[in-house]
Image (cartoon, rainbow, N blue to C red; front, side, top):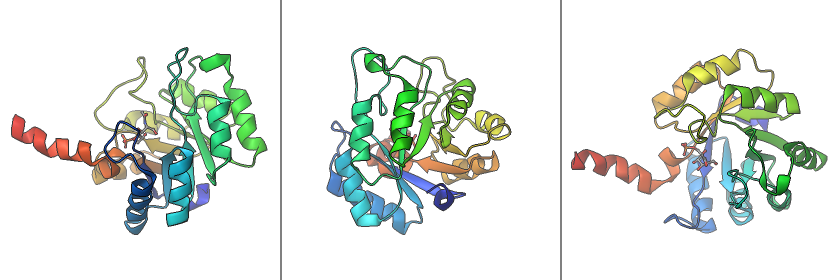
Length: 222
Ligand SMILES: CC(=O)N[C@H](C=O)[C@@H](O)[C@H](O)[C@H](O)COP(=O)(O)O
């Protein structure tokens, strides 16, 4: 999968229960539209959506399950339960929160990583800072990403992609760096590749029409 997405765009097709497009059928169509637009891979949430997307597009998928637990702030593939759900799909890669925060039930990231690798899948580390990315590389993740930058209380929160972080990381990493989060425009996408990203994930700017609409209506309310 990593060879297939090198220098290319991955589109995140996600709509949670509280979002208007929450539907595996719709996510399958979103993914098909992304494929027709030239996407090389899809990032998707939940077994149902992933099954549909693989059936409709045949593209390689990065699978996640988002779930909230009371005893942890981690919600992207937090525990063994979510990894097992993803192992029951055709996801070639499984992404999980790889921040240094405590996981639910005291589970350990090393155990989840081993479970993913023992089942012949690739693992992607969703991180928020430079230190977390280097830690994930050391643990043995196949690729690392900036997905959570701006989404942990201690990471830098910028309106667009953190190009400085991507530049700094790409000069020291040995594993592929996937830029993800707040890539809002085609110019942002070009900039993350120029900063050294191996591949990039774009979500809301393509697949969350409620957010896209709000960008237009905002200029009217000023
Ligand atoms: C922080 C978090 O939970 N990120 C999620 C991770 O899967 C998704 O909600 C994002 O849409 C995805 O990362 C792509 O980012 P953007 O939508 O900004 O292009």
